[in-house]
Amino acid sequence: MSDNETAEQESQFEQPDRQRLVVLISGSGSNLQALIDAEAHDELGGEIAAVISNRGDAYGLVRAREAGIPAVVLPHHEYDSREAFDAALVKVIDRHAPDLIVLAGFMRILTPAFAQRYHGRMLNIHPSLLPEYRGLNTHARALADNVKEHGASVHFVTDELDGGPVVVQAAVSVAPEDDEAALAERVLTREHVIYPMTVRWFMQGRLKLTSDGPRLDNHPLPASGLRLSAEDVTEEDL
Image (cartoon, rainbow, N blue to C red; front, top):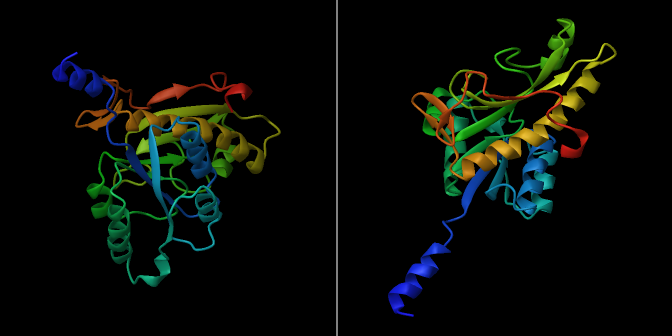
């Protein structure tokens, strides 16, 4: 076998540089844990390079450290403006050179400059079927409206609060006896399925945000994203 043939064979098995993501959190980090678990099973398509929290008491920092992931605290109250905090956050993020930024319960409204800097490579998960119930207290608001279906959405982040292009949604049925805690728990189990899945699509180069909206495998997604019904996700998937 010639040297050229050997080099050609070896090039077929060369792996591209491992994709990196930075996760931003403010709280317990259950979606972070879902991402950590996916990476542990080689189902994330990349590695979590760092976890950053604006709160020092966020339990997600413990999850990160136990997984051997660099965990950084950047307290927002130490900055005199939202712009100053976001500027500091940019420096910390860029130090880890991520391909993707993932918001996992990050309870901060981002400045337009921050959103624009990472346009097309920042994802968020929101506990409602967007565009319904943007903002906070989504489960209580859904129950107050007596909806039959509720759920979660993964979307690209823009400078519009919870208004970026939706990639995928997962619905749950709302039972007459549901209270806020029960509904929140059922939605959270769906979040743990669709968030690692969406991150993997991005890391594999299958998901992109174009000028015409999100595309998966170069196919345009509908305005509401892909939709998993309550029956599409069984207990075996959780």
